[in-house]
Length: 295
Ligand SMILES: Nc1nc2c(ncn2[C@@H]2O[C@H](COP(=O)(O)OP(=O)(O)OP(=O)(O)O)[C@@H](O)[C@H]2O)c(=O)[nH]1
Ligand SMILES: [Mg+2]
Image 1: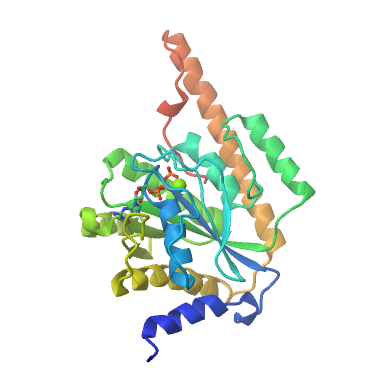
Image 2 (image 1 turned 180 degrees about the vertical axis):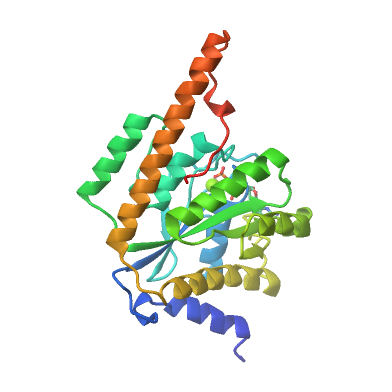
């Protein structure tokens, strides 16, 4: 049977090695694709799609998916895609304000261990104590690419756009790369509008696709190509970053500084909000806070 162009892309992904980058591996030994997004937008399904497209076997639901509403994935779990690439599933967020995202920035900076149940917390002391714990076994060797998964079925409100823009900008500050946006449910909504919304937020790579699911995993060339394109783009991003000299240890320290400042500012704001609300006779509501950038 004649080789199809997508077979070359698949081989390229399967054989990708950091050692073959322009300046060698520079101390990294793994590419970590870390998924984020709202609950039920297709993060776990994207992992299953990647495994399906890169493997030779049947469709398997390796990462557990939800029926519809989301909130199914609670732990952060890593799945090995190739010798070099690992993809990380994550708990979906209900919002992307400062109170939800602190945990994500700690994950992006590789300050939290993989494959462990981690209680999400907003408490400043607990977060700082976790950062200190991470020094026991510091991770300098993972090169992280953030992936924001968004279903075009939903549509972003103005408030969500503002929060998401700040989140995306902070992801860049934490990892050095703009997140790649994967728009799922491509045929169930206005994907062009969603694409434009994310472009306006500064996102450079936007992949529109229809995930393979348990209910519908009939292989089609377009679906296959879109999933491969997503992985190919992530590796192109990695190759670009690796053209420049990097210092993983120094980068980790810079990220830690960002994170501590973010957590500190958030704590102060939370206390102020609480004081103000208590003064007015209301009970403070953490989820009512707005997002603010790391800078
Ligand atoms: N038609 C279609 N269905 C999808 C697509 N992506 C996900 N689904 C379905 O949407 C539902 C939610 O998908 P999940 O992959 O569980 O979403 P998630 O983001 O992991 O959800 P949480 O872990 O709960 O935050 C499941 O029923 C999937 O089968 C897609 O691109 N197209
Ligand atoms: Mg999930």
